[in-house]
Amino acid sequence: MVEIKVDTKIYDKENPTWCPGCGDYGVLLALKRAAAILKLDPFKTVLVTGIGCSSKINSYFYSYGIHTIHGRAASVAQGIKLANPDLEVIVAGGDGDAFAIGTEHLVHMARRNPDIAYIVMDNQIYGLTKGQVSPTSEEGFVSITTPYGSFEKPVNGPLLALAAGATFIARGFAGDPISLTDIIVEGIKHRGFALIDVFSPCVTWNKINTYDWYKQHTYRLENHDPGDLKKAYEILSDEERFGLGIIYRKEKHTLEEKLPRKKAVNPFDPLQIQKSITELYEEFL
Ligand code: SF4
Image (tube, rainbow, N blue to C red; front, side, top):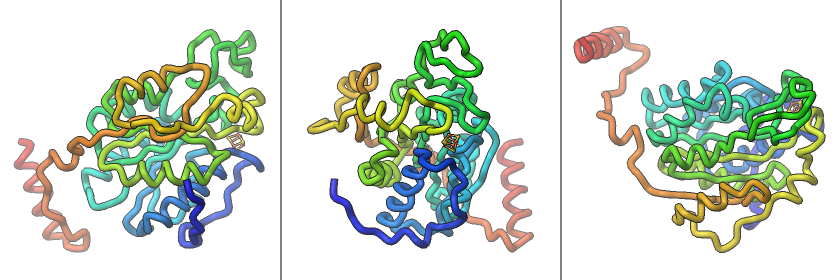
């Protein structure tokens, strides 16, 4: 890992309104750095988000963006990618969005393998709605909705995505935006679905999973072969210590490559649009 000086100014938009110290600042910084390294064209990039503190990220990143509804960012992103495969489509959102209400979309996205990177900002709590238990909260986690501690085992999102057929799985930490930049660069470059799960502390509501907690419970993967599926399962099944880095990577045809490509339609030509709609009707009737 080498710290590269990059100018991220072209991706600046509004100033974030996240709480001071929120992990999401680190993710935004890493995303901007990754975009600058990859020279992403803001006019050919779409950042699709769901609902939650983390999903506000597309208000702070200069590109096209859609703030969708809770749990549906993945499905909207797939629609965008299929309609225009030339766009760089990135999804970002929280653990609730990805691993609770959006789980079914995530699982099917993983098995379809569209060329989309999905950055999950995982803080193990619902922050925007003021501190309820989330699908990734630990067993026994006390919150305003679990006063006796959570009775449920947390959802292991990356393991679920791997089992569903995801071709790129990585884990990062918002407290280390330089390493996270490298991970996001590789995730965006990956041809296929890339799940990047990022530990992003909520400093306001989660007093357990703090920056120090993550430092104590994570380690950097060294000499790991991301092509080793068995090892990837092993790393992701560890519930005590969490490996950071690229955990799994595999080449496979993307969803867009398998589908026949429609001729591009000029959006300013009503005759072309009408002809294209008529053709689509005929195809499906
Ligand atoms: S409530 Fe938590 S997740 Fe939301 S902005 Fe504040 S620190 Fe970040």
